[in-house]
Length: 70
Image (cartoon, rainbow, N blue to C red; front, side, top):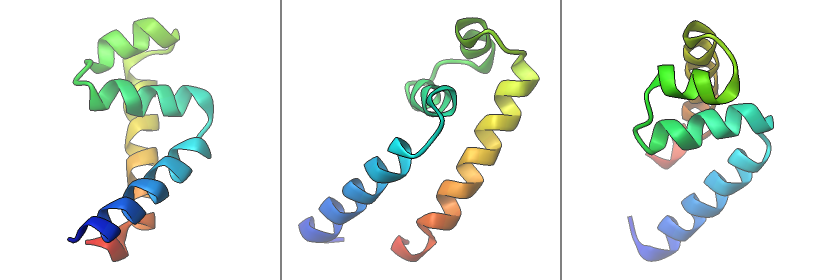
């Protein structure tokens, strides 16, 4: 990828993250920082299973949205 494509990809990623519900965005941000699902669950106040389900659902949507970039 060149610099212009990288910039476009980042803009699209930030736009996609801005559209997430706040808890889902926080889950993805913490996951990207290598925080465990258990720690995220404690922080947000949900079960680890709920965190996993939300994370998977959001990542599937993001992969679908960005499939043309890769």
